[in-house]
Length: 127
Image (cartoon, rainbow, N blue to C red; front, side, top):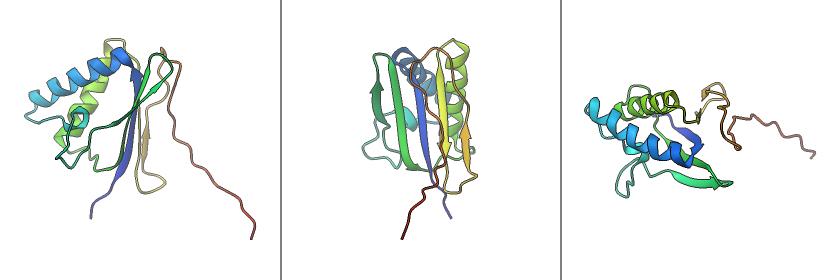
């Protein structure tokens, strides 16, 4: 059985450029191809939907993808996020899975005007 996730990354324009470069470098170092940030017209992992927020914030989103911690591509992306943060670029990461308790949210990073967060919403309605 496969489980799918929605994955979002918010960063700055400069952070996005560094993240793409570091993801490729991290993937090469472990013998993988980091498909997450590439243009993949024929791959299972599609290119991220990219949305600009304000003048300097970029949101990268993937919907309904396999994002397993054991996948080399996932390891490379997470390593790239940490390296880019260590260099001083703000990068926020959120992942939601199929179950309500299956999520990752690494919190707010300083240095951006737009941020991402996970919200659980309960709607009330009347018959």
